[in-house]
Image 1 (tube, rainbow, N blue to C red):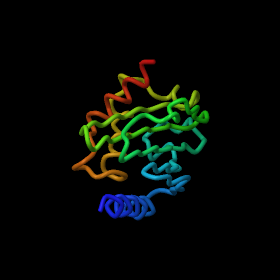
Image 2: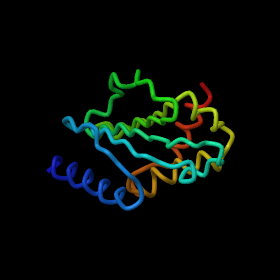
Image 3: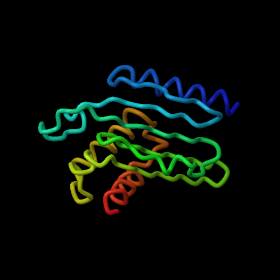
Image 4: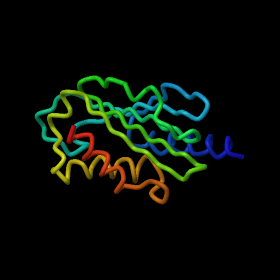
Length: 147
């Protein structure tokens, strides 16, 4: 039953994203989905001084819920990596963001509106609003930008 729900949520994400964004699934291994979404600066409400496409990599672990070795992942200059881990048995959710060097220059932990655009994208267009904590994602963004 869990596998059916997992596949259903995976394909629901694919269908939803295909309407607004270009998404590539890089790997599906056990319960880990790695997806790459290509975004324009306008979609993230960034100023027009960025001419490059921005990549959002999502590492979504649904079963084990532990931060994998991928946490040492080094994003490309205009990439945002988002690790979303759910431990079903402990009802624990972990979220971690890692910014590429160049894209990080455009974000500050006190810039509510820019951070909110990332949260809205994740909460309303990628994951289910009912199951995704926008507040927790916002807190993880602040944490990533304070390092």
